[in-house]
Length: 366
Image 1 (tube, one colour):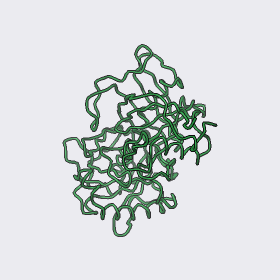
Image 2: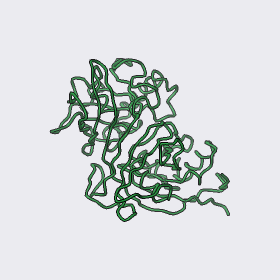
Image 3: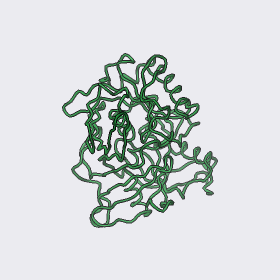
Image 4: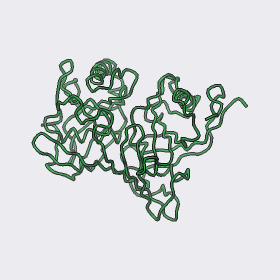
């Protein structure tokens, strides 16, 4: 036998796509695990022709599931971001809210969790950050339902809704909403807010980087000078946020803000992943940007349209439409108390089977 077979599900979660594994089917050693995930995705070649990846950050994601281990969660969700272009780095630091949209359904499909009535509520712990999330999955007749009438911008058609309610969103990796203690500061002359809500981010005004905030993904991705400048700012932001050298990490992510264009919009945003613009909006990014829009003194102040009290819906405009984030919060002076953030997503099982990797990468011994 020259290849090792590993059971998998291929799922769309929100506006991302990835491989979902039972954690018990993968190696424990982190270095070996990274090599296995790179091989499964075909990392190191632009279109990932030798694996299951899709040549973009949003299609090279991995969810590894296991029974809850903390006494609260039904499911532990361990996330990995595989690079489309290099076979060296797998980032185990962040989590992904879009991929989390498929975790409940995947856990039910794998038998890690059991359906309970027409709707199944699952408590999910994000292993990478410790965040707790409740997911509501449609399970009429004891089976996951994927067809439905819910629509999300960036995905054609409709599907069954998946409701996600995020708790413990503040200070996921940095230990505080504002790791530096400042709502606004400058890096190389650019005003930024360094904030950690669900995902550590460096957020700036698009205009301060010579943009309108209405640019397409292609326009941003094709601007090499802009991306190089943003990366230099991001590396310094990571150092200030206590994340160390983030050159090889996808955190902190980057948000560029502009006034909302549409009726009901809170803010227009472009989310960088961080070396390319997200085609829509990450769930974690949407929550962090919504928090920034609510935070007194942030770079969003005077630009975003923010409600005075919560719970309230925040509409984040992105290149393909918008994402609604239900924020439960209270403000007192310059302080912002975030209680939870909720989003509606959809998910779909695309394929199931065994992904094959060279036995030289891993022989299947856990």
